[in-house]
Image (cartoon, rainbow, N blue to C red; front, side):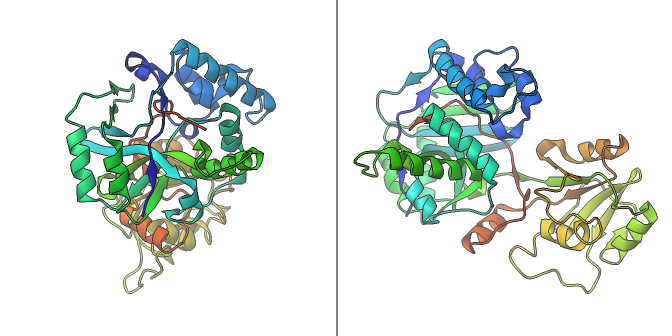
Length: 408
């Protein structure tokens, strides 16, 4: 069963929510974050990416940056001002992007259940990224952005969610990217706590580094604590939990900077040994088992040859795995997509137009558009205790940081 817990949220006033809320810290680089926050002193990016307020070239992992994070966080608490709720609560968070709508439950998840794999994972984390967010949490004594969880949809929870959304919202604004963010305060959080006890597992959809960092921060604070009881706030992490059937996964595409020493003709000949190549293709694959490739100013479609059965393993059968195992590794020499500097990843709404631009402008030699991984793929991999290939899923729309903060 899943144990969720109400929390005393630190939050902006309703009329400042749109100014404070910011994109997640890890979807923008320093220059992009600086540009987004430049004209907005209340943007939470000043706390989540504090290097934007320091000289260019500042090491983002230096002591100076974390001191600046705390200084900016304290300033934001005073200037917004951020307010602490009088009592622990649970919230609903709705995202609307175009015709797509999803509503999640905002509460704290159990780090014990994370450690016991009752909150299931599908991704490996990088130590340097963990180090950064662990230190950020410990310096601020707060979790400022939620982990994005999912669960197999439950009718009782769906009913309670719909009932709650009939009331007036706490926050309701449309961000500069056109995505609408609406948050409700749940009047009876105990009903949700009891309902989630019927959910056998929660799954991390996005935010593995935030969850791992919360677990590491808990270990450090537990070590420093006198009389640790297990009920302290640091034993829990901020999360938004969405039913699986509402989630939207967009393609996570690839662009490669060179052809590994091959000419275009040699490259195509090597591909033809592994795939059927349809010379006149479309910019997006039409179904699973197809890949769109942009090379030399035109699109073509790749498919496994007739009579070649796709791999049967849960992970090996994913389109992203087949592309890696049959093309990126043996032909382009890309062994580890997490560390190879020759490959770039283009997710979300940027789509095939961005792939075409990168190749046409000479920033890449070839690009591949993939059919999106499904949420059922993610759940099956997680249930099997396996790991999905890096950059397999791009969830859209994104939650905002700074709206509901969990103090630890």
